Length: 112
Length: 110
Image (tube, rainbow over the protein chains, first blue to last red):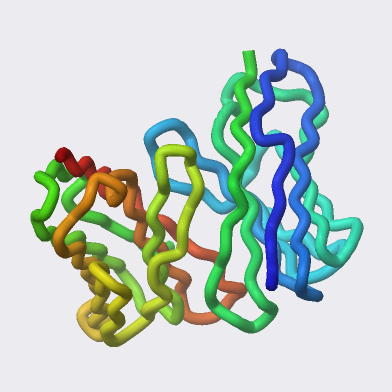
């Protein structure tokens, strides 16, 4: 069966520090991968998606970047965090060409 | 871009009550999913339902694609049903980039 892992689960970082959130999927190959952000009390916003290694599409201009160095690994990064980067970050995957997205448990980021 | 509106924004129920949550969307979609977000933030997939009707235990969903709305029914609600229910859609074409509604926050009291 397929599983999706995200880490760290919780992170508290000072303004101006770097960020790296990691997402991996097991049990499948060539998945579509997605990063979403959820601000407190709100819905989810798509940040990035990827259909293959090295292929990243950004949905909104922001202080964050994404990379896909391996088939089942998706990384969300920032060189210098802003207060507005605080939120709940969720990674999701779907079979290439299929429709159902499955989400990881999320990473809660607080920038102080 | 496509707009997704969910109603009601908040709902309070007594255990055992039934409820209907609504999702309206502004354009044609080839993907519609209902999710339940539990108190720990985990998004649980309830239904993939771009059209038609599905049932899973006490939950059922109906999407009328031609009229651009979907309904989620919860029967005999339990306290464990509490949380936020999201509707998410992806427009026709593209890579299933789901666009989420703002959610319905449900509280079920014993």
